[in-house]
Image 1 (tube, rainbow, N blue to C red):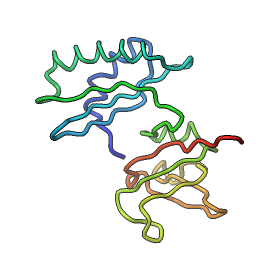
Image 2 (image 1 turned 120 degrees about the vertical axis):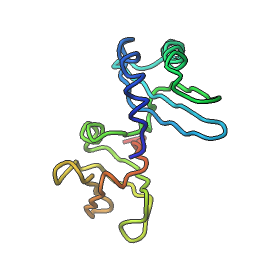
Image 3 (image 1 turned 30 degrees about the horizontal axis):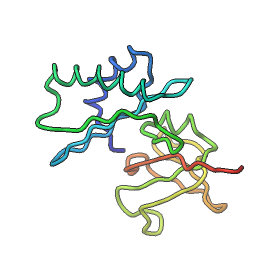
Length: 154
């Protein structure tokens, strides 16, 4: 799973101190570096919440000189297709449909897998999905990206 744990440790206390859950951080470097922060709270996220967190996190990043060069900071709600960053996220959404993108081809040479999340097994190292009646076990370490796959009109 690709996350920037160093950045999470740096900005997490600020985000949580403002009363939000830090869902996760995505940080891509290079030309046009992008720092994307996902926040949530039980009553949902409004634009004003994103602005508030962005302002505070910008100050922390500047003081800590955490990002070299120019970058874009995005603060967002996780949305309907919420990203899953941690095993706790996978546990929280058991029973929901998910889409996974893997680091390398697995399971008949596929890198993209979708199915219903069944849970976590083998000492919390395998993500278990069901797809078309078949149970699939995917090593958590091989998950590059994971998102909920919302079902409309259930």
